[in-house]
Length: 80
Image 1 (cartoon, rainbow, N blue to C red):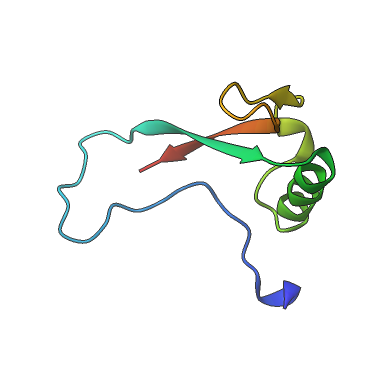
Image 2: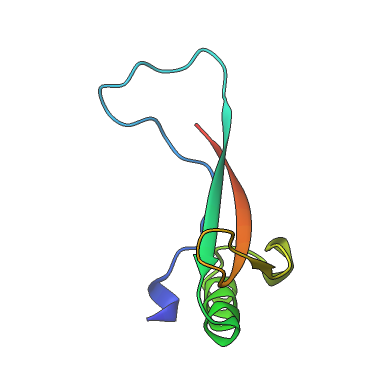
């Protein structure tokens, strides 16, 4: 299965039927993981092995103000 995975190149094309932008633009996308410290670490490691993001790219563990549970945040920049 891992041989079939193509790592994320972080460059996406405009959906069909959408007007093409005149200049390439970038957009920040925030990805948040909320759960137990063990579960969060496991997901970060899995996403790293899949080529989604380096483990060090995630924020340090923080407390989610809404739930009081641990969380980590990642900002991915998309170009389209």
